[in-house]
Amino acid sequence: MPQFRQKPEINFWWNFDGRLMTVEKDRLYYNSWFMTVPNFSSARVLIFDLDGTLIDSKRDLILSVNAMLREMGREELHEDTISGYIGYGAPQLMGRALGNGTTEEEREKALKFFLAHYEEHKLDSTCAYPGVPEALEQLAGFSLAVLTNKPVRVSIRILGGLGLAKYFRAVYGGNSFETKKPDPLGVQVILREFGAAPAEAILIGDSEVDVQTARNAGTLAAAVNYGFGAHDRAAHPADIYLDRLTDLVPLLGAGQEEASP
Image 1 (cartoon, helix red, strand yellow):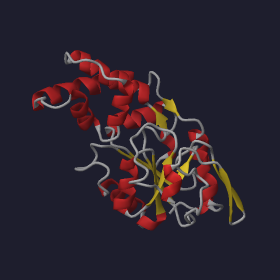
Image 2 (tube, one colour):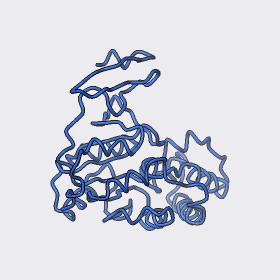
Image 3 (cartoon, one colour):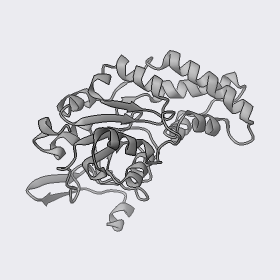
Image 4 (tube, one colour):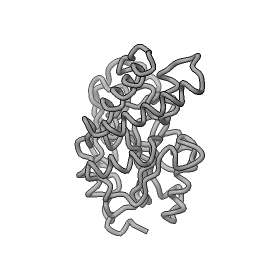
């Protein structure tokens, strides 16, 4: 209820359908077991965001952005500022980091430098979030895909470097289509490729971009409570919130071995 969201602290227990659910103290929004849990039993396609959902790439991205700013003769930005810019694709990240008044030529130069620097340093600190490899292993019976606004080639190389690429039937990036998330085109292509309807898919991400994408595509939306993407949960609430990716496994129930189309 709206009045709950206005309070600085929530600390209560709730029983529903025989399952014990809790909202922890100081958490302004419900966790993965809050109130009514949507029915995920029809899901057979799981589409994952990359940065902030499967991998913690925050430090490598921030360092590459600030390296670009130094190269362009600009002052470095605070890491929290840069984090808020991530999630919309590299070109928009460059535009936001450079600020207003930059020319197209400057943005192109910045993008070229950033991509080259990030390619070289993409795995310096980047790692899978805790529970991600275990969750993907347990969800291997489903059709899994990655849809990110990060360029596709570097995304594939990062997944390969972390040993995660083997779990995914498809990986698409921000330069794979004419449009990026939150446009639903990428989701629609994946669903056609997998022969699935929107009601049979869940999009899992860490930002409001991912929730908006799910809504635009007609799929269910799951959001992780970790990550670093901007997310106005009041404006763009997900269907479920997950503390760890492994929390998704029991939501899907038994029968995941037969889930693949």
